[in-house]
Image (tube, rainbow over all chains, first blue to last red):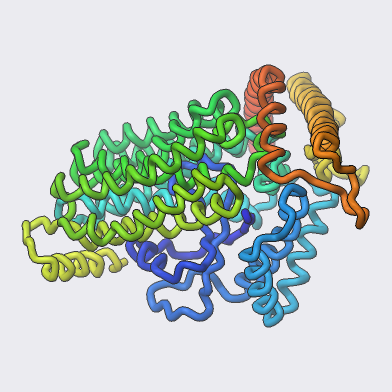
Length: 440
Length: 147
């Protein structure tokens, strides 16, 4: 199922490597992720990390009362989401299991959070004054810029930066991440600005700030400009012109190509995959200043990953897409949809093999990543053959942990800049680097 | 919305169009520019409401018809023994979704063009109004300072 989740942006932004480390966990969790790209997908997926039980000295992402609130919200939304789809006869065992899990957790939750959720949905059904409330502004802007998705985009860019075969420079890294984040905020805001009536009609997106009238279109455009212009300037002047150009191009590609194309042709998926592939390339060019084969390989991995991820997800959204007028493969060319997903799962295996050939990683990388790549390819094949909701969901959820794990393995198998061949040394080196990154 | 308010008010989503209606506040000394903005917004709201209400109604109607015809072809009734509404599974509905999307493609193209144009016009007018108001405020400030 797809759930909408509101997360107040937490105080400190943690390093992407930490974030990737956080993603290492058991397979049967739900992940709260948004896409690893510039918000091409019109949905938010939810990840129900068992945060309260894990010892995490490095970060405190969510305060526990919020956790309960989120679970209750999920519960509400799950119930809401399942009913408009009459086609599914029985609820999936996964969903009911998740519901039970949630109920157990929410039983222990605070009373305050229950009333908070009810208050929000009640407020939704009332008339509200269209006045800009300054105290709500940070939350509104966070939702406008799709802050969680932006965070993921920044982490893919950081992965690109980390994989570049140059000594790590913290100031450059921070500037690149900040610039990418600002560019992503700008692109997401413009996307929401363009899509107000369509967002209103889709369940996943109907609570966006512009749809709810929480801020005016003019303000949204001004916000986008005030994020985008400094962001690109920062990248061009503070990092290098190539990264700035890539950032500007990506904003253009996302807002002026992908967003309108969503309603015109199924080719939008390929454009969107490119949009998602560019941030790691930007990270790489920020580190090295050149666009070489390694950058393209990383971009290629992200590009190929987009297809199983999106195609599997869009399989369950066909009704909303059809009614909303979105041209997506899952609606118009279902066979192609599944074929492409499978094809790109297999491409990921191929790209993993190319990595050591290009001297980016050692040969341990394709070997270690083979199990997860084979698994996602297997799920891709099942999706191709069965073409039903359960296989699409399995593929989608697999893609959510597959990417962070793949990037993590890639990072640990990175070929040391000093050219050491020993894997033990490499691990030590890369851990050293990881420690460096963790310093504020 | 209360009568004394000086702001626009936005309401809950409409049942048919899923769009949120806005009640516009008409200030007593509304400038011609502000009036143009308000009228543009009202017109866009009316157009959007009309389009989506009609479109969604057509969708639901055609969906019901499709389900009915498919069930009939299978020899089933709309409601089974328990009185529950009979439904088709996702794969059967997929044919309907594909068909509906291609049928309405040209309608959507036209609506998109229309919507983008309106959106840009309204936002541009908002910018002009904001600028005019800012200049007015600065002039008033200057006048106050001089006295």
